[in-house]
Image 1: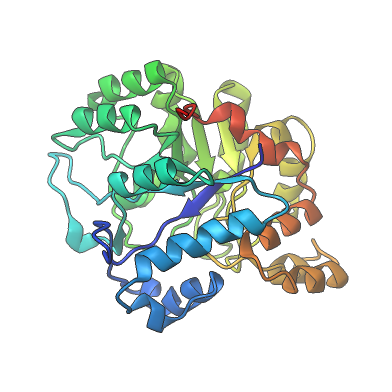
Image 2: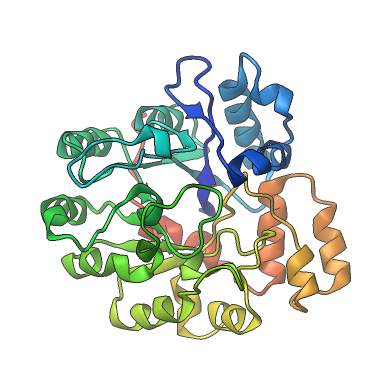
Length: 329
């Protein structure tokens, strides 16, 4: 099974999904590009049926792709204080666990990554509900949501995740589209205690940073994989217009022992483009133009990842890492 393990759901709450979208700062500037990347418009975004249209478009992209069989759709939790107080005013968007679990139960093309801040007062109840509902992973942005997984107060929560075989997919490295609560939590080292407890962790973006603008933690990520056999990374956003990918990092990600720890992820609706890989000498002009002609964004990203050197095992590895619950019937 070939899985895209990093696909965002976006919703405005139409149809009672419980989602909302309130872009701020760079998120506001990027909104037209995000909706355009999935073949939609700002008119659609502001319309009365956006949530259904977005899901149907995403489902159709999976069905039409020659490279992707299923996608992991991501819930998005609110930032919280350490005392469990939610901070919706610091968020740009919200996607409920109920919504992604329902999508995964309704559509064979989707797997659900829930999002739970461990400081929530109902965190354990929400975790059990999500496990019963078929959650395949737990997604978080530690630096955005204010989650220090090394805080020992989260030990029982992590132990339950390890016991249930629920992997932790955590953003690592740069974040420029949402307000950041604690920049220190961008380092993959935020996953140290979960890894020690036995939680399988996926460092989204492999700790890469936007060149010049942000620190790059790729070397830390690579070193941690040598110590922790339960640590993986995903290559999401590494074919996007964000200056994340260095030639030296790409060589390590696509060859040698580190290549065996990488999962495929697109980061849709973040636009996938071969422009920067071409400009950096990582992609020939002909292959850049071939990718630009692929209308399906999931297929385009998969094509670009192959052109950059990621092998076929990158696409199937998530099937062994995620918690995939067999559907009844």
